[in-house]
Image 1 (cartoon, rainbow, N blue to C red):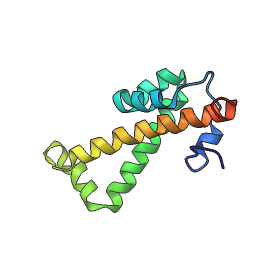
Image 2: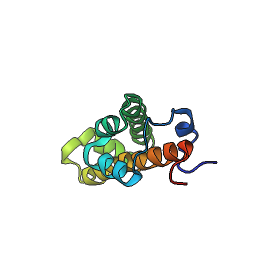
Image 3: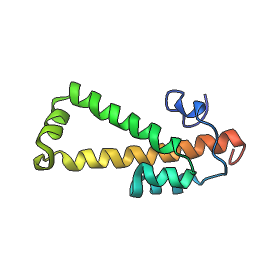
Image 4: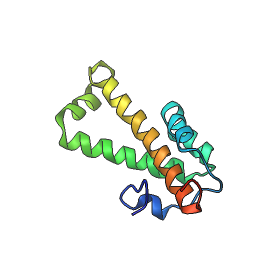
Length: 111
């Protein structure tokens, strides 16, 4: 099993065209989300697939965990909103880090 493999998803995606620093990808993911990662990686796939994955995670969480359902129905009035935003930002950052590390490893760079 290779470094940074999200349930085999990252091995299905083709390697990036060039080496990307994983820490840079982490910070770009936190600051600008999946659109920024798509631009950094020069890949529309790296914008669409994680966006759908995050949407499915939120939907499944809303159907199974009552606080998330309350957050989605109450909206901005919910006190859980900062935790939801922090979760989304960290998910985007870790996806960028793992995608860059996995691609660099498969290309033979940095280990």
